[in-house]
Image (cartoon, rainbow, N blue to C red; front, side, top):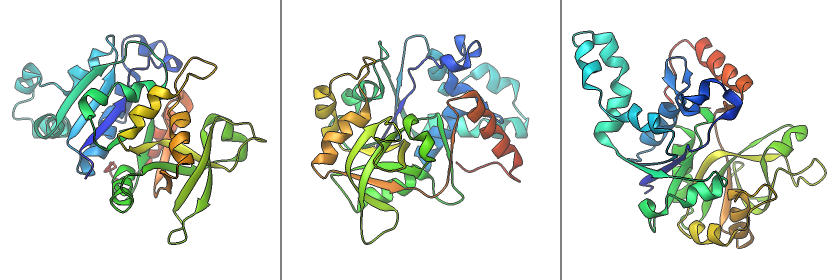
Length: 280
């Protein structure tokens, strides 16, 4: 059972300036619900109740978002429609434990994940990057991955999707061999962070959903920074992949990269075209 989900949300979202000068990128709305809410909803629907948010000291608005707001509650009393709009936030506050830990320096995703160790301890855990907004008509991507983990315990699971070959330089790319029992599961033999077209071993790209075993923390500590001074989770996972401890899962659903203005607009357009609001 996966009890914990970690959300690395300490970045400053500089591609969205000037709005992210005061508003965290994760609180930007897709229709009327922020990216952060979609992310925690996805974890919640997968049965996860321990939410670990890695923030920085300047992004306390994320913490405030999940806190009760008595004045607003009083203001909308007896307005059933507005009351119902807040149910998603109350559900998380009332039924989940939210832990906030600080990442004082922006030293990469691997470093952000390491900050969660004091809360997560020696337990497997999920990781969701809210930038990657995922939609599935049935079970959410992280719920699908939790099911995969149940049959592959003590192995890390990374979500992957096929990308155009001219886009491989934007992602961590896996070298893999198929698992004969499934057309969606693959043994990861190696992985390369943002390779050139000529270096890429495939076009299967890692997206912002992971199930990680607790030994990842020890590996991250031994992983050196890249040329930009950041500790990449891909480089840490590579070490476990060489030991046969990583599986790639080609998820069912749609991913929209909302980390850019263009992708963010695509996310809003996609959900606005749907007949009803998405479940995840």
